[in-house]
Image (cartoon, rainbow over all chains, first blue to last red; front, side, top):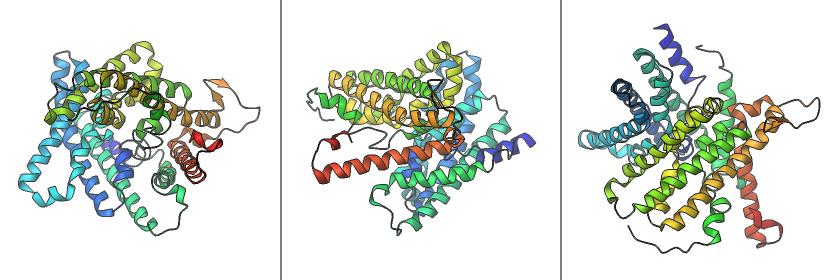
Length: 191
Length: 214
């Protein structure tokens, strides 16, 4: 139990997926222009990461049992793609307002490195069920946290007078540099 | 899906490296670029692995472009790409375990690299096999080029070496920060700003002698 808690905390702060491990940077740059969008994307990714982690954790047992581990990557990516599709369909039917809010971002989660990373690493590190769950949730929350911080900063920077050349991607990456420097202060927290 | 007749020209290959470089100009596929560029050897291996996957999967997709139904094309692309990534994953594990550990999960993550899926969707599914192969090779070389642009300064400044050989003078204080994630986030925007600046000069002054290498 203690181990799971430390994995949860360290995957939010020390191993923050966005600024420390470079996972899911496309959405970090693309979807952080507006706070509401960034928040929606963060929540969606957290939910999908958690669900995909649960499914892939269970699916790994038959893979090991039948000695077909070489199919792991294909199985995992197929599971993630269909999971996103299922969530999309279910949401459209039961939560149309929410579905409208998420829009295109839900489909884009399939190619978000974060989801596949969690699925692969939990297997390669031989986590127990509790540890895997903590890892999946923690990584999702770390992503959400950084999206919120970045969107907050960018909304304020909208009115700032930055040089023409640095507008857009370069400015976001420089901000990420400072956030990464900040997160480095947490080295050692959570073990 | 409309069929385009694109002739294979120099631009098919070099355009992908200079003008339409996926990482530097379009800022696509940045995750592995930033993560593995701590040393030049890592950059070259990652570039080679991604280029192999890109060329093979694009050629296969281009061959099958009339057979794959439009509705399930993304899934089909991902399965094809995943197959080649699995091959690379196991090959690197067999060739060098050190390299495998250094690149970490990022070899498996080639499968969700936007460059591969983007190329499959935007180019391979619409063009002839020959054009696709040349274009994919160009995109792969362009990706490797971008990796090296980050990797060379990061290795020299961060650990004072190049390809593992000592290249700086005695008493050089290495910049530890370049080896950490911060170094990646610092180097890439500087290159992007430089490229934007060169582009701006080029468009305002016409294509002069010095301005053509943006």
